[in-house]
Length: 441
Ligand code: GDP
Image 1 (tube, rainbow, N blue to C red):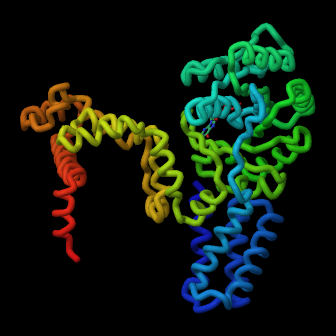
Image 2 (image 1 turned 30 degrees about the horizontal axis):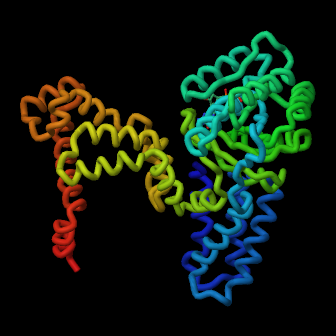
Image 3 (image 1 turned 60 degrees about the vertical axis):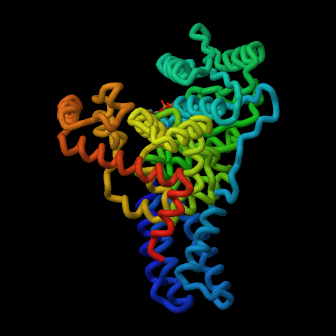
């Protein structure tokens, strides 16, 4: 996410790094570089200019008061200003009524239907809501089907009326059904067009007037940069939406949309989409995003993702097993599955401070664990729960069965054993104290 921008900002900061103090001259030079980096990232020209003017003023103003280095000072100012640029604080969804009605708008291909599914899934699993999805795209039967398939996958009901050609009526029927079935949130996925189109705008205005939604979320593809911001402007003028959703931030988007939307339309970004899977949705936190752009990682989000995936009861069970040295390949396998659910590996790595930059050119796909999984899957149930039983001939068989090399099987088992040893020590206070005593002072 935003690797290019991070890189260029980093280079811009270099001008100041070796310098003892901030002066008009070195700040002007740095600001020129920062502005260039922002424009390259497809940030709106006016936004880039007012942003750098602001940062420059702050940098020159604070100089005399601080003892930290100019580079550190600028990082701090940039962090504050980028956070402010993206909206300052996190903007949550509101649920003022039962059912709360959320209207989803945007162009075709922006990711509306995918987001509708992700949002329903998020509200169900994280916010304890009972959502109903409404398929309100009367032009593309495939879109209705797509929503139904998603609904099935995440266990959320979908209201559709294939007979009707009246989006206002379908939206109303959906809300009536939600009331009847006790759904407390209604998410209406509307029809888009390839480009802004008067008929589409009128139609969605009519739906808005009829159902009076509590939230209108405008979905836009972050990869489209400045176009995303222009489209947001038009939709906002017509619909006065309550928040934007940026999708496809997992791709190599340059970041311009995320940085300009708030300043251009004055509406908060509420969510970001980071993949095609239903779990690939994040609440947008301006401060965390600023920190990521500046290459400072985002540990808070990383921990939160982990908390969402790991069940407390399961964790307690696991601890018990580790203490008794009963941690086996079944546990190992299920741990890998949970890590995979946390999201794209490269994205996760980018949340660890400093690691994002280091991993920039390393390709880690979704199949990073494939070899390990194949090896574990080729073990018999007995072997999985009795790792000590895996002798040489068993290892040969496992390598063959999993299509891997014997060395790979050996390496995995060795790593597994090492891990068990450390786990056992960490879970045993006496052994841990012993270990600490032996650490070099
Ligand atoms: P709609 O026409 O606005 O309803 O768009 P869709 O929901 O059908 O999405 C269009 C395409 O974008 C589909 O192939 C989705 O899988 C993909 N997509 C949606 N959101 C994301 C995202 O956050 N990341 C990635 N990589 N793909 C996405």
